[in-house]
Length: 102
Image (tube, rainbow, N blue to C red; front, side, top):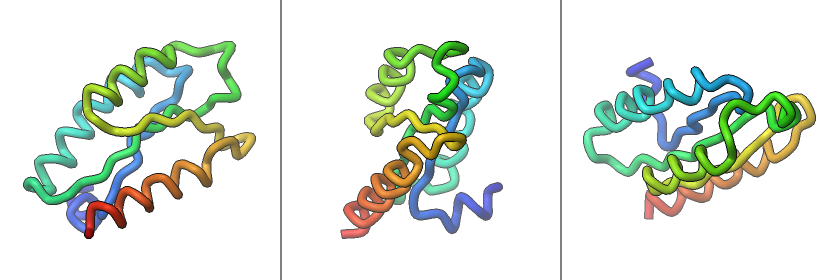
């Protein structure tokens, strides 16, 4: 994983909105990314997946948005099943990567 981080120009930190444990694991993943990047530009987008399972939600939108705000990153919800916002998530990250490389 460290070699992936070293070669990555940007990162999607993804959790399932119906799995609180996946949300709790994000902090460690982010810390690992920041540690490996050693202060280099590191665009990150926080992504709550499985938006189609909103009725099973364990992580509220406001909670995820608050974490994104704390980290000063953007938050978006997606559904890989219905293809909701999937393209948009990658496009937003790509824009952030280009901006950070200027």
